[in-house]
Length: 196
Image 1 (cartoon, rainbow, N blue to C red):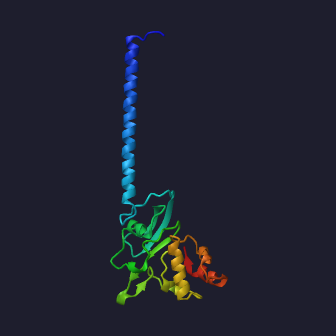
Image 2 (cartoon, rainbow, N blue to C red):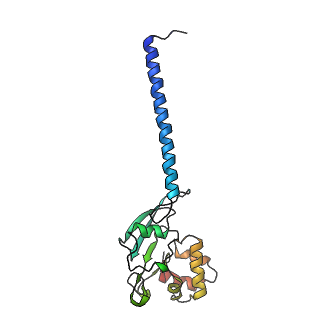
Image 3 (spheres, helix red, strand yellow):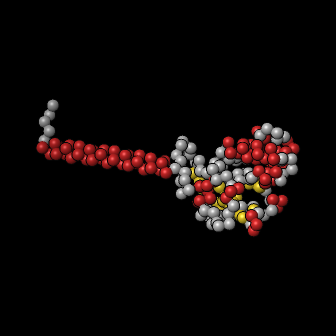
């Protein structure tokens, strides 16, 4: 085996030191990435608009309207909740009637989140329009709003809200055909009056 010259030993030693430094930096960066990932995971979905990391990927696009400070269309991480979308839209205004909104419901892509506004004497206006004037948001519809639809009574309205909550929200009105007691005529009425 040929002997290495002094210059070759210095070059090989410099390469070894450089590789050690690069390796140490990579290990340190990986540790800090894991720590920041864990911190993001622990801060999770709260009122700060965060989100939980749980194997879900992709973004959702939702329209937040009604009694929020900055109504508009927002891109949200998969797994976000209605509360996250309301927070992203600047939070509720002082006139918001949050008691009728399920803030814990999981968002669906294309969903419209409507935060109704409280009127005088405790009545609620749904984003400035009467129920007959436009469709009701499937993601935020209350039992009382659903009862206004032809063929929907209090039991079926409650079943729809329970089904929506159990499934973390709904992305289509057609999913309601899985609710017991909803037949083709009721589905037609629901398609007319509800929007995802």
